[in-house]
Length: 315
Ligand code: ZN
Image 1 (cartoon, rainbow, N blue to C red):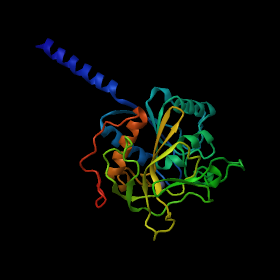
Image 2 (tube, protein in one colour; image 1 turned 135 degrees about the vertical axis):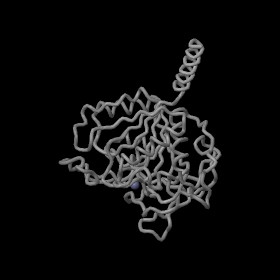
Image 3 (tube, helix red, strand yellow; image 1 turned 90 degrees about the horizontal axis):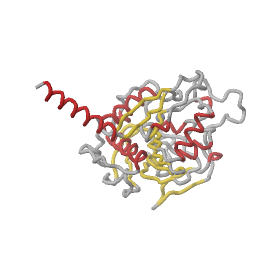
Image 4 (cartoon, rainbow, N blue to C red; image 1 turned 120 degrees about the vertical axis):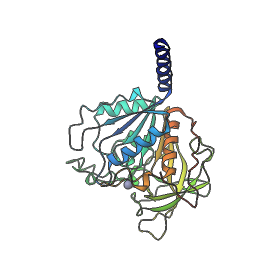
């Protein structure tokens, strides 16, 4: 009997290790955010959503806190299929930045969630990798970044590249001046613009996202960028963009695949229970985007509780 139990234990552990070996290796990189976001709250939500997908092994890599020494922070990017960026803060060392660029150029996957695209305004390769970003000025951080560097005091604007939005049947790259902005959190419709992309395949034409920010007029090189989904703000609200703003998009950089979800605002005093990160639309597109960035395809089914254009669904 003991022998049979041992055999089954062995078989079970063998099966488990086979399954684990097949899982996608995810580095969730976090540890800093600007004064308006909580990397902890965002991070708890990301961990929960990636773990529940059942196809990811997630390692959380936490940087030193804002203002601390960053010189020894050097995550082993090459050990992972995809890096999920939930980081917005002090610059990494030159060595770490170089390793990250090499990783992406060589075919690594990257996913940027919401405020992660505020980071590294003055790192040109990073701006190429994420395609478009927002804000990033030194005063938005505590302690402020780039102290004593007079040439690094602005937030992202036309100097970083065009704003990119959807008009008619395609993307418009618009060089007119302006800085990034967003209207107050509200409920809005997300429109699927590239339904044949693996991330978007099977998702409805439109669905509702509740109580979130619409990042607008993001600026950057915007090269090799594919808009997957857009949102159009309630025009009565302050800072409402008159354009269909990209909410989900991809960038190809070298051999690397990059997915951005600008959704998922978690305020500085919020935790993972805020509505923006409980929307099933946010959760599903995050899970699918991470798989696509890692492998180039998506195997996950669309959940039965995916929202419609009339009803947002919350988990
Ligand atoms: Zn936000």
